[in-house]
Length: 335
Figure 1 (cartoon, rainbow, N blue to C red):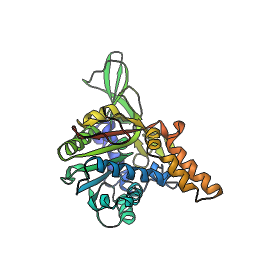
Figure 2: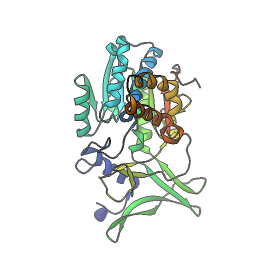
Figure 3: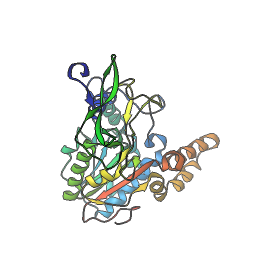
Figure 4: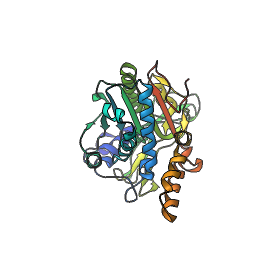
């Protein structure tokens, strides 16, 4: 394509590498777990999904316990988080009776895994545009980091956009002129796709009621920096090395994403702060008491990985938005 049409932007390169219908990374494999390329929080510990379930039940009560609502998960992986969420929610049968499960998933491989884990009673969507017209509780864990970004570089008072072209028959990143301007020099990243999805979800929440919980790695405030990265077999690799064979992501700009919802943005937390407030340590101790020796140690180590500052606890952030006139959901305070 580049040979025929010329260089393409980083956003188009990401979109093709991840979502091409034949050669796209997510379209042809299950990338999770030890045999895959990376491991997400729901696969690390069942407690993660259980606590998201507790959050959902509490958020539903805060909404006034609507008789009909949708639990929506964006990028649900193997369905592990949703399975753990629904199991924990069995403690609130009224919640489950009112709930419809809707999943946003483009990968046929992962859809099959989700169906095998969750069974019937689930509705799948390609995009958020077809979600039902009911209040929604929206969960997005490690979803926005995989959406395409554009990269701009300001140097010597001039701004360029990074693009992928060919040099001596090999893929190479180069610079193309652009009319974008920034206040300081450096590399700046923007995800128009992320902001458009945030706007759509915010419109749904504001008009019908609900809340969204976004958990991902990234930065609280917009800032310069090159965060584009690729992972293969649990190791970092060159983004251009094996297109379609490696996961490509970028850190989420939570400030920009939060504003895109145009809803009531609650004070953001780190993942460690959120999970501790939701009772991760107490729940982990209770569950691990039934185990013995190395199995107990492994279970507690998995929980610690989610909250420790030098592992996932500080790198991952948690954003929560509710409708403009809505009440704050625990453990987020009101703005």
